[in-house]
Image 1 (cartoon, one colour):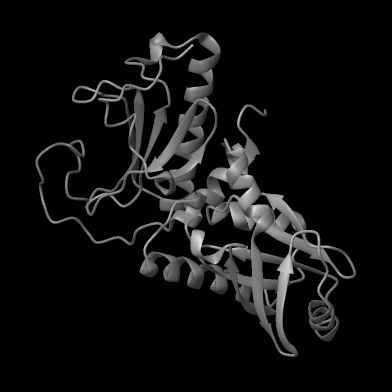
Image 2: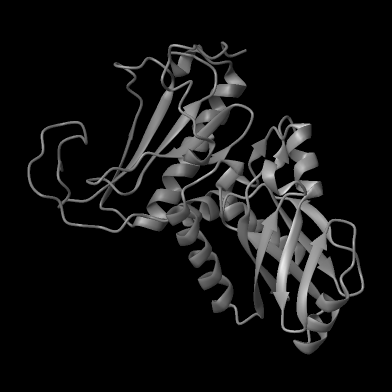
Amino acid sequence: MSRLPDPECPICNDAPAHHWLWRDDRLRVIDARDADHPAFLRVIWHGHERETSDLADADRQHLMDVVWHVERCVRDIAQPDKINVASLGNVVPHLHWHVIARWQDDAHFPGSVWSARLRDGAPRPRVPAALWRATLLSRLGLPAVHVPPELADAYEATNYAIDLPDGPATLRVGAQEALLERWLTAHSQTRWALISAANPWSSRCDTDANRAAHGALRALLVQRGLPLCEAVNWPEERTSGWTEPALLCGGLSPEEAVRIGAAFGQNAVLCGDAGGEARLLWCVRPAGAH
């Protein structure tokens, strides 16, 4: 059994929640990139342990399995010259592993990323969080997250406003919407999904970050050639929550919608079939489920 978090440990307290890319009951994967090293992930054990050998056999195996899956993701996405995998913890003795893409023309090669800079490294674009999440999902499955009852209730009570060609419409869990039916018929579709990319894992982001994520989601769905309509998610009591931009997409299967939602850091998406009620589908597994 891992030790409880230490209130003095910066790794135990490395929120915000949207910082992580994938997690389960025992560990999390975060994006640790910096300007010199744009493909740098970190696998962090939740409990405040010092060494990998402190873990029980099953926990140690799980940790290392995830580390190797993360290494494969970094190789697949970044196509580096070399991968560095390291567990140090000399400054902060909380168990974590670094998985770092390296290139011969980066700022520190062939030294470690913590050594003195040898040159101005060749510029490389950062990898979008949605791409990391999607690749981790393909290898590790949906993340496991504790969803408090009050958050689940908030999702169930959320309204979804859509400005359809025939007029404004509101979608709600468990309800039907006549104007949506007409929109689906006009586009020869029999199912729909409503997905947001804002505020990953229900942790508020700034306007620019949400706008960029929304644009990336739109670009992904446009590439599929499916009909889209802008939407807004807003809580039942609008003064007690925040609104989020979203997209209504015709033609997505529930499975596709869940995968896309999870890739953009969403806890849930709204889906439905022509003639049916809107239903909420979770993009995470309940914590403790395997």
